[in-house]
Image 1 (tube, rainbow, N blue to C red):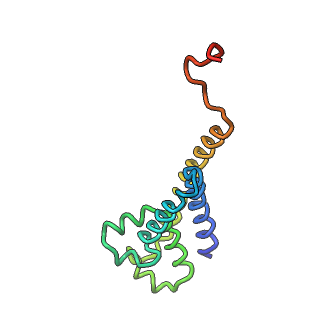
Image 2: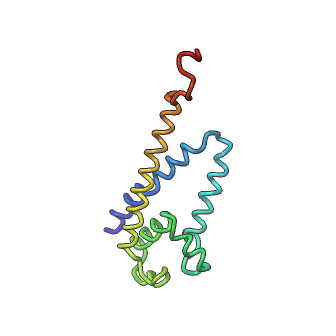
Image 3: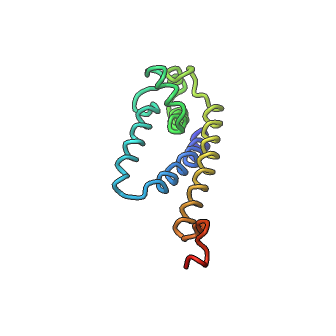
Length: 138
């Protein structure tokens, strides 16, 4: 049952981040920097190595990203309950997982909508005219 709410909530939390990065990246050459950023976030989020075994500052940093909470929720859905002892706090923290992923989903969606709006205005050429450049300047 946990998988039924973690997976959709995790997708809704992570997808807008991809939209924002897609708006920010203007040239294909910049994709390598985005890939490095995402790999760093994955490494710090405890996906490859248990976050509880990392340095305290990395534990705090990793918990700031939605990827940690998505990974925690997925582990809670697929691993036996005894393995919760290896997590920070010794539990799967389902309430915190839902709350953090929900906050990330709301904040990232709002930012993605703003970014898409700015991109569409830029693409449509609807920039406001500069002061003093009206009809007389034509």
